Amino acid sequence: MQQVLSQRVLALSESETLKMARMARELRAQGHDVISLSLGEPDFDTPDHIKDAAYEALKDGYTKYTPVAGLPELNKAISEKFKRDNNLDYRPEQIVVSNGAKQTVYNLCQALLNPGDEAILFAPYWVSYIEIVKMAEATPVCVYAGVENDFKPTPEQLEQAITPKTKFVIFSSPCNPTGTVFTREELQAYADVIAKHDNVYIISDEIYEYINFTHEHVSIGSFPNVKDRTVTINGFAKGFSMTGWRLGYMGAPKFIADACAKIQGQVTSGASSFGQKAAAVALMSSLEPTQKMREAFRERRDIVLNMLEEIPGIKTNLPDGAFYIFPDISAFFGKSDGQTTINNADDFCDYVMSSAYVGLVSGSAFGDPNCFRLSYAASEEQLREAVRRMKDVLSRLK
Image (cartoon, rainbow, N blue to C red; front, side, top):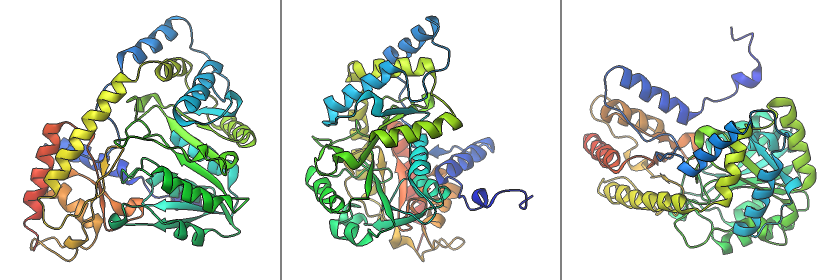
């Protein structure tokens, strides 16, 4: 069977987040009470006014194909949102709507990367960045920063990673998996480095924009010295709890937008018509439901952080956005409960899953083998119980 499959798929790693979700389902089927904190999915429902807009669009007959790059009214709404919220000047013809922000990343890598090109990833990174870069037959180059630096690489690290083969730099802010939010000053410093290299582009993934606990979200594309070389990605999954709607978008230089639309036209064509109608309503309506969701996430973050700080050996920082905590657990490496020895973050997560029935994701999937990712997109009751169980089983490790 292996001989039938392409080298591309054989080299592709399984998504660690989806793997842990599968393990959780299997353990539940065996009768175990599993608390899964592995998936990056808000536990809130999509706001009613957005669902109502989709229902009205269905009744009005919006059930046909759309333009590949998106419905004109949605692209116009996205253009206005970029200007209103981000000080970005992307015209509607520079917008491409896709079947989720993940497809946007895929389109970009296929449009920009050739075999032998290099793509710089800030590590820890979102799991799919590195695999999508590899599928484009390019080389991922990781620029790493640990928990002691709030997972923020220095401008000097970025400068040292750029070579004549570098095509773009990709990062997220707020960040998946760390919750890191880059400040205006930090982003300006990165922009100043990249501006010196004429052929290097920026891909800024801002899908967690509305789940930001600081007082300011800054888009790196708003800085004049990199404005014309920045692609800004966003979507509806996180800020509007629309994960299953599969709607993402980007603003890009026109030639890049055209290239991505060309690829998408051969792969999936446009996103769902009635979903796009509802998405336009989401962008132009009150953000009050989103703001309430953000405050609930902030409260959950504080609860989980306070409880994790009571577990010896777990080192955390203060994540300023998204709904993840990314603790360093290297202090547990080499410890054992008499049956299981923890050698790395993979062992740690497997131990917690099999002993406490709590699903986490190993940091190795995100480029940091010393950490794990915990999603606090779950109820307060589940979070308290999950950390209580973790504290209990980790106390057995000596």
